[in-house]
Length: 134
Image (tube, rainbow, N blue to C red; front, side):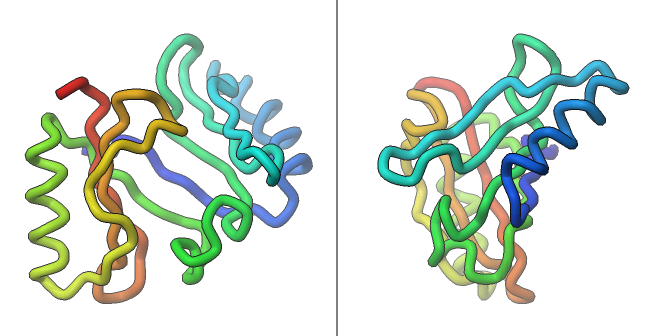
């Protein structure tokens, strides 16, 4: 059900150093770094070696200030198909959520990353994503 979780941090370098050590105790490692041209390193993802990141840390205002105006935490739910991502987004908007990113490819994560983002009625950031090609 949960694809990944992200939390906001105020000092990315300090948080990276902390989680690099803490996750070793659980046999998890940093598996992905996100660098945005002109902004530098903005996020790091952790998981099992050779797998996708399931836990992310990042500086919210560097990643996307508008999308992260309510804070740095968000929950991404795993979708089996891109059609499920589309259905999730439509159901969320019809249910009273506010748009935080319509369904589409997010190639800065990886070439097949298809996701949709919303703020639920309480302002929590939620997402559905599919990692498979169309």
